[in-house]
Length: 333
Image (cartoon, helix red, strand yellow):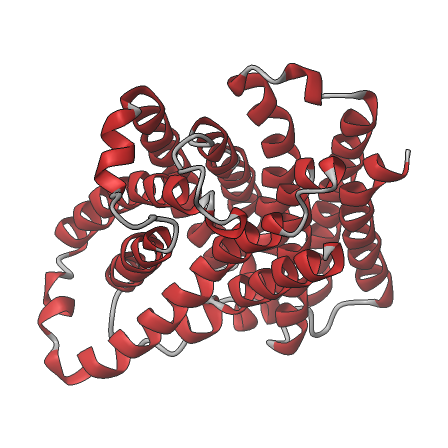
């Protein structure tokens, strides 16, 4: 059962890491326009459909939310903060590419999410020595991958700009670190929303109502920013460009369902890990580490590391190994 749970989480991570591939197929829309449209699918529609799976007969999502107003509002609040992370997450991909951008942002998110969730939710006892060692190794992995990115910028020069149009290592690193810090609020939001479910709800669906509130909060943040950018850049016409709506809507929908699959898979996977307290505690880190691994696989496929020296590739691989090891190290210690 544990292996099945890990496999489900891995499938969700692979889907998330693949979500930016269909985004690259969107045509004749500005960044803010396609980010807004895919967000409707990723942060509203599919999370709502997922949350409905958790609702027993005779109950409602609104009922559980109104019965627990404090928990619901805190979950949305941390979702709003996570929205900043989600927004800058997209920007980190813009400046660093899929591989490096996701590695830095998700690595930071994995480490901080593990520490901050017990602190904010009053479960400090979960922060044992093995946990802190795992987080330390995660941060080392982030530093190593950041060094690989610096080597990449020296190795390939103009080729980096060819594979990643807006490549900017300095700006990208800052944005990715901010993204990782704020993205950890997703885990905190899930922690506050732990009781937003029903006793008769199957274990595999229990976190989905809280997931909806977190993504709703994130949607609010991103919608405000995207609409401001639409006004600033005079790109409202994107939404009226009927000639590309069919194609772009299809790829935004595909990106949305792939992105949401990571948290749907996390919920399902955790349902099969209930007999392992260690794996439950580190399920968030496992998801983020797998996201990093698969995103770099896509980075290789998309030739974002083309032209790099063997030393750069070796440093990148070392950083990835450190991130993966950090997720399982506390269970071994």
